[in-house]
Length: 320
Image 1 (tube, one colour):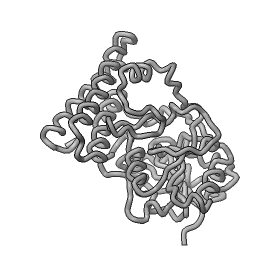
Image 2 (cartoon, rainbow, N blue to C red):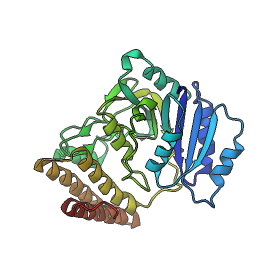
Image 3 (cartoon, rainbow, N blue to C red):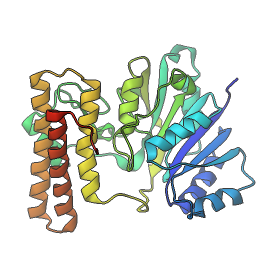
Image 4 (spheres, one colour):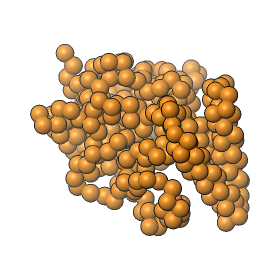
């Protein structure tokens, strides 16, 4: 019988972050029973493995697994190895406040919330004020979306509204999707075979929202504003701005087509309007802040749009 909390953490070339995360998890008021580190490093890179082997005195089972392919693939490997009643996806550069796991699992254990499949915490240093964001002010001015409620999926455009547009709060609110950086799920959610899609390989973008939206067909999802953490934003092992922009378009397109397999002409038009407005914003950034990063971001966005349009027309798979 499953019991306790299994923490699943994908990692790539971040031994120091893993060491810091294990220390952070060891200070939880409700300790996990198992921490699964899934290392995507090349076989010759043994740094993270050596860190895990050197952490013999931990108040939980520390399980090291080597598996590559990207965060979606690695989290699927972690799900298979998890023994807990709850599965917490915690990124290696996330640091939880001491009561994080206790707050969320106490909520999930309430009989009145038995239909809640997962609860996300709140990353306190990731709030984005829409009134101060030029991009979100533009989105509102153009009326791009049919909803601007943070954490909701806009079915009119196939676009998930950034959860961190929600200011810090101390309530538990319902959402449509959540990230996998600081979230706790019932293991039961995965018992019928639900996993991160095999489409998402390499650098992770939107695979967590896609999983949550699929899970949301059977389960309610919540955000607990009391469960705080911070994101250290480790610079290690991140893709370049060109690849991030390119994959962003392709992954958004995949989510749109997978969740809305028979979109109306209006939905398709609004989806592409969002993408082209984003491209225009990227091109304007080159003028405002000329440099390699803004140029690469715009180039990646354009590449992604062209690839997704070809997919839309001929049906070949992204990345083939």
